[in-house]
Figure (cartoon, rainbow, N blue to C red):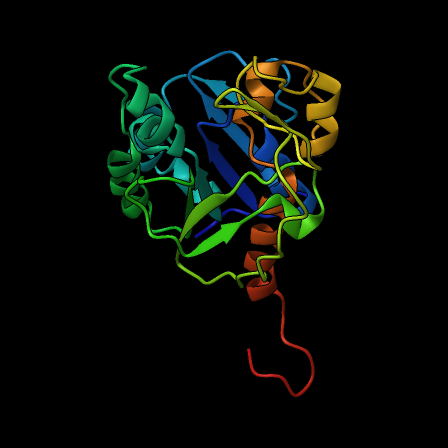
Length: 240
């Protein structure tokens, strides 16, 4: 049984947490969050364990420590399946061998018995695309499509609002203007760090690499609120 926190907030485990974009959305929804990442993340705004995420999860399962959590979110590396790798990079012969940790992550998550979410960029990563979220759904300054495999409950799919224009910057030798910034890379008319922070809704880190890898908090706030809504007590005359 999940162990309650002192303030009654359910606790969420955030695997491959990076700088905490996903974590902040869950926190805003009403969770306490603990992160895990192989790299030091001094800007991560919540308690964090530095180490291998899958080793840490396996240890929590084996020791029973997973029982303190109500839910797990994971954003495992899968660069081999991301749109950039299977598109431009591959066509140009760029890049090298990439690790795909989606399958081993799912195998461990299934062992927890907990509801979980696996997040991946748009591309060919082997996940169910239970919901797909886009920055335009919250009028953000990025498009940043992300897919989510949701296990243990369902999350409503917001309507995919039409994009208002192009992503600003250079593409294949031609410059385009538009209402969105490109939240990846460094060259080709890419946005400044302050522009990225504003576009993503992330203010606590000014590290470009962290910003370009982050999930906008609006996405996971939507997912987290859907999870918590199913835990809320039913009102008078409403079936639980």
